[in-house]
Image (cartoon, rainbow, N blue to C red):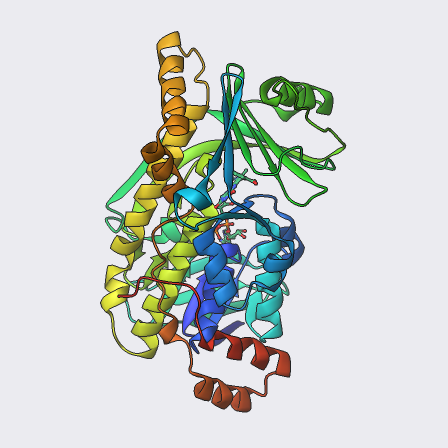
Length: 439
Ligand code: RFL
Ligand code: PHB
């Protein structure tokens, strides 16, 4: 038996991209169904990003998703850069006249958005299987999946959003010739990441180039540290008992007068590094967003931030297309996003190659890296370039005017008998505080 259904936007993937898109669409009165192969618990526990641009924070706040972020997020003025045994503070707030960065884990964003969507009565299906997207060239594409109870569904949509990450099914479903370019670069190293029951030894995130390789000291809370080490791309985690990880982190990160606090390792894994961009990010009525369209190495902390920028633009474009019958922004979606994607791709690639040690690196290469780092810490112009790019200088392409007006919210609340807490949340959005690029 196949259950046939109808929605406006079929969303594949309940990572940050899919969840935030579904939330932003709901604010504009556009209906969606989100399908996800993993369980809710798995999505909420998957350790990944932690560093948010101020543009991302502003959008989350502005969309009513900032309560816990404002309480628990750790707002930082900038980062530290360390090389040749010297540590330098890069004050982004001062360099950009006010931009900042925030540490708030992706796991927490995912929990916040899932809770908000469920409170809103959203159609969110976890543990689905055999997801398919079809009829992408028609006005009514379809999303098919089998739900956790084994029932097959076919959902007729106005558009489908492929938010299913790098290994998802949406990008490969684009008909032959639909993707004009798929550009990829791999790196000969990966990141060994740990989550540790160890209070962070630094007040802001610390990026370090050391002759043994890159190291990064980040954090999740005042009690939990998040640290990374450059390791060979094909490294086996079994070669890294906890003692060895801490010893290597100390070797790379410690400077005279500063010690690294250690503690029990709660989780560890190795992530490969890759740059990838698929273009265009649209094929007919299928729109790719987030990691399904592009991947950056995590050195510039851009992946999640790009996913948020994509869905901010996509929410506006789909609202105009589906609700208002205006295709202009949907037609411009890919070009608009790719501009930011390539900027971030450059930043991430540049920071990665400046801070990591290539296997077999010669002294010439090492000196070039040190010269760039020295330039960043001595030239205000160079430091400002990093600060602007790192904090997400360009405003997001999101038009808050697409949201339902308070009057329309009252109407839709009355119609769907939503809870008073949902109502309170929605009414907060009538005065957007963040600045966006619209059109
Ligand atoms: P996700 O998070 O991969 O979510 C995709 C979802 O789609 C589901 N899925 C399917 N669902 C239904 N049917 C199918 N056939 C499906 N196939 C897949 C998946 O189960 C999943 O739930 O992609 P999204 O939403 O685009 O979000 C992207 C971010 O997750 C990613 O870019 C960031 O985590 C990257 N990243 C960082 N980004 C930052 O902005 N700041 C950071 O500080 C930062 N640090 C990091 C990072 C990524 C890292 N790793 C592990 C890659 C640090 C690390 C170590
Ligand atoms: C993190 O906190 O996990 C993090 C911070 C900065 C990065 C990457 C990851 O560049």
